[in-house]
Every structure is written in C-alpha cells, then in structure tokens.
Amino acid sequence: MKQSTTQAAPEGCESCARDLAALLTDGQGGALTARYRPVADLETGGIFGHLASLHGPPDGLLGAPARLFGVARRLGREPELHRRYFEAAVARFVLDQGQGFLLLPLGGAAAALGAACADALADALARSGLPAARVIAVHGGVGALDGAALDRARAAAHGLTRLGVALAAGELDCPRTEHLLWEDCAPTCMLIEDGVLQGCEPNLLRGGGHAHPIAAAAAAGRRVVATGVVSLAMLKALQELGVACAAGDFIGKPVAVPTRTLSAAAHKAIADRVSGRPDRSAGGSHVLEKMLQGIPPVAPRTAAGEVFAMFERTPDLRAVAVVREDAPIGLISRYDMVDNMARPYRHELYGRKPCTRFMDEEPLAVDIRLPLSELSEIVVRAHPRHLISGFIITDAGRYLGIGSVQDLVREVTAMQMEAAKYANPLTQLPGNVPINQHIDNLLAAREPCAIAYCDLDHFKPFNDVYGYARGDDVIRLTARILAEACDAERDFIGHVGGDDFVLVFRSEDWLARCERALGTFGAEILGFFARDDVERGGYVTENRKGEMEFHALTSLSIGVAEVGPGMFRSHLEVSVVAAEVKKKAKNIKGNSLYVNQRAY
Image (cartoon, rainbow, N blue to C red; front, top):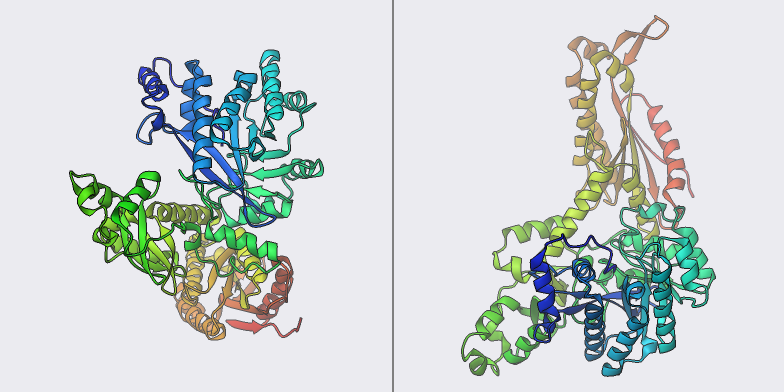
C-alpha cells in the first residue's frame, strides 16, 4: 500500500497538525494502529506474509494512511511517525503470531530518512524479538530523486540489507532512479502496488504492458508480488503471467489482527490450480465465497468476559457466532455486547456468565449457495439490527463464517458496474466480453451446456420500410422473449449486437424453451406489420437497383450447439460451430430451430 503518495494537507490545516501532535505524544500513541493485508502464495496456496499499514483514529481526519503520512511529511514529523509505524506493525505482528513475512511499505521514508530508517526498524525488531529475516521493506512510489535524496535512499537500502531485511522494489516511476538505487543492492521481490492494476481488463493483461516487466523480474530471480487483486478473473490472469504472490480485497481485506486464512473464494481458486484440479468456481461460483469472513465461533458455555475481550483485542471484529456441534445457534453483536458490558458493574456481574446471554437467538443465516439476488432481497426485508451485525454463512447448516452488509453492498455495486460496462445500450443485456467470459468459464469447469445463437431473418428490409425506431422495438421484443425462455438462475442471455443474441442453457429442457420462444415470437411479431403484409406473408420494396423485390416477414432463427466436457477449449472454437449452426437455421424458412448434428 502506498502510504506516502498523497496530496499534502492544505496549508493552514491547523486541526490536522493538532491531531498529529496528539497522536505522536506518548499518551495518545495507542490511537495509531497497524492493519495487515494477507499476501497469498500462489505457488503453494498458503500465506506468504502480510502487508502492514498504519492508521489513525477511524473517525478522524488522519484515519487513512496516505493522509496521515502526507500531513507528517508536510509538518516535518515523518521520522517520528515512521518510528511509530515500525513499532506498531512489528509488535502486533509478533503478539498475534503473524504467519510468513512482514512486508513494510516505506513510501518516501527511505529517501527522507536515509540510514535513520534502518535504525528505527532495528530498534522495533530488537524490542519485539522478530528476526530481521522475516521482514521485507518495500521501496516505491517516490518518482525521480535528486542527488541528495537518492543518496539517502541508497543509505537506507544498505542499512536494511546489513540488518538482514530483504528488499522489494515498488513502482519507482523513473528508470534512472531505479538503476542507481539497485545497482549494488539488488531486491529479492518486485511489488506491483495498489492502483497499478486498477481499471485493467484481466483478459488483456497477458498482452499488456505488465507482461514484460513481470517476466523480466521472474527471469532475474525476483518474486513478483501483485496487490490490488479485486476479482477471480484478475487472480487467474496474474497466475498465468507467473506472478508468485498476490494481495487485494479478493484475497483478504486489511484487518487489525494478522489473519491465518485467505478468503474462501481465493483459497479455492489457488488450491485448485496448485493441485491441478479443474477450476469449477467460475462455472458454478457462489458469490458468498467472496464475502465470507472465517471468524472463529465460540461455544455456548464460553464466558461473556472472554467474548468481550475478543472485541477489545480486535477493533474490526463486528460479530461472533455461537456454534453448537458445527451448527450456529446465535450471533453476538459487538455493539450490543460493548453497550451492555461497559455499563457500571456489568462486567463483574456477567463476565463469568455464558455468552448466550448477549446473543441474538434469531440471527440472519444464509447458505453459501444462495444467489446474490435472493440474498439482497432477504437483507432488505430483514430487521435493521442485521445491517449492523451482519449474517451467518453456512454450508448445508454447518457454520462457515460471517458476512457483512457492507461487503454485500460493495459486491452488488461491483457486479452492476461490471454489467453496465459491457451492456448493450438498447437491451441492457451483457455484450461480447461477458458472453465470452461466461462460455470460457463453463468450458474450464467442464460444465455441460447448450449454446444457442439467435438471429433475425429479413430484418434489414424491415428497418428500411418501417423505420429504425420500429426496428429497435423488434430488437427489444426479441430480447424479452428470449429472456423469458431462460431460467434466471441457471441460464444466460447475451446480446452480441444488432439482431444477434446468444443463449447459454444449463437447463436440461433447453429444446422446449427454444421452441416456446419461437412460438411466442411468431405470434407477437405479426403486430409489427400491416394487415395486408401479414395476409400476403411479406411485402414488396424497391432494392438498390430500382427493382421491386419481395421480402418475407421477419422471423427468428435459432442454431444450437450442445457442449460436453472437454469438447472445446475456448469460446473461439465454439464460435466456429456457432457460425455453422446459425447458417443452417437461417436456411430453413420461417421461425426455425436447428440443432448441431456433428460429433466432436
């Protein structure tokens, strides 16, 4: 995480200066807290380490790391803040037995502090007993450096190396600075920092500008660590490029206590690739896997004081599930427990009582296979208390973890934005990119399906005679009829463009669904033509040569290709068969259906 790349606080921001001064005093230092983002090892499926960041009070102006370090730099208090940063990050990492390496992004500290940067880290390591070999210091985000700043950065790098700390090269944004900094002090890792991959289309990463530096770093023996991984598609693309480690919201969010697990979705995707198993998550993915927080539950007889202590140790912990024999029986909300236990004498009275006294006996519990649409509807209709405490996620009644409403809102928003990005503007249906992704996902998961390619016959002359506005109405009619023929939970509909549509059926009765769509279209399309045209079965128009030409009424043709496990490798191979079956369907007069007869 870039902790120093930010705009400085506005001149005259006296409140920021006062807040920072208070945070750096001995009495207020505890308000500065470290958070840890897990870094997944894509080669083993375990945790490579944790990226640390320093935060001020969450309700203050200096809560965000970028703002905090930016103000400190402007006020000349960067050395003090970095000393607190090292102390807080190292101490909590040791206290909670963090796994793997501790990655410490330095931002501009190396260029500003020089050898003092290594001295401050050495003091923190000495106090905690953490071996220097378990720390990786990340240089990055500094841009071009003048002579003095470059000398200080090199002094910091040499000091850290002598200390035994490994170095990682972040985005220095200047080839000359990078060459001079690393010419005699080579890093062991390359970090692709937050924001670098933002907005990148995962499918285009392989041929984009990131492929060459990643390959070069790997060839030089450096481990590539990519942050900002926000989706399964992004993770897969980075794995194909040879990236060794990854972090981001899809892998795990920053937390006050170093986690011991990755997100369920990330763990499954990485484990499948490591073991060589086909990745089925894309074809039958459960969106709740992305939101699952594997928070350890408590037993019904656990003392209330122990649960209260859990909330005190972990500021980000919002709720704890109460589980009996793997089945959840209640949920304890942080706000309810703290509100009750913080009152006079409550801790003495109830601290040794069972925690069930404070649990919600009717928590919101959902199965991990629940579709996102149904989950959203359940949450909207639920009692307002669930918006704060969240919901329990189960697998056939067995406790898995907890999900938050904030993550649900974020996931819904992300899916809506992704859908809108590639949606056809006329029908709002998914366009080429999501269609191809959906087909590729099913092929990779070896899921059987039937892919139908739909096209309107004699549509251009209809546009010429009845007008484009009327033609748009026919397109919307076709989209509605085809959508109604699909099972919203199992099937997929996309709009390639113009009058071409694609249906991907996982419903076993796909043939009956296609026939029903053809019947409905044949009845409803007649309303778009004049009565005389309907009676004669078409209409006469003048072609480009000035000759009168007869055109049949607009009809719908559907060509279907059944796809079995291992039959095709990508949507490109499927598209070849699609062109054939669609052509054969269009050769049949009227509303027609053709099913591929070739064997593969």
